Length: 223
Image 1 (cartoon, helix red, strand yellow):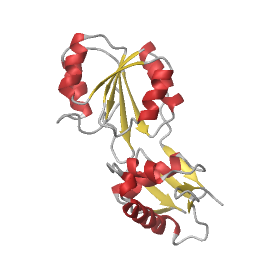
Image 2: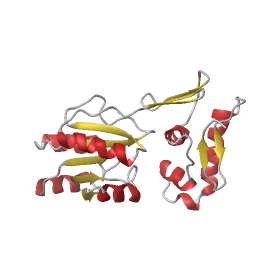
Image 3: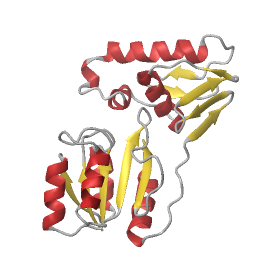
């Protein structure tokens, strides 16, 4: 499968790209909407993957509309993170949308379904752990039925932790999720973000869900 990826490094990392290539994908990358359109006009691709956010002054939705306006019907997969709304408000034939982070196996299955023109299963956007509920689609969270008032940064961080519930998340991964360009150089800022989230999620409850790990990471679990 030949992929054209419009990337701004909000969802893809080196390990995901390596995993795709190990699975036999041929990958071509573009960092701007204009560059992506030029590559589409010169070559044939099985699927276009668009990361949500800025693509050289264009949004992923702008790029998609440009592709379709040019008469190109190549399947398109949108990737967006928990702090963002889905680029398309309603399903459109020949497209799919996934909220990051996602596993490589899920990404591969959606790419395969798009290439084959099969209907894709909606990604699970609602998570629950004990009395904590997180709805990525509605962009809201609650604990014991009480809504949590979270900033965008706090919600993005909580989404990362609950998607990996039971598994430690490193400070580096947290930095990437918060779109920090150099997470290892500012651990104090990341620790502050965690502390503020813990206050809102755990402080009023006997059972705490966010825990630190020996390697300076964090895990969301009942312990």
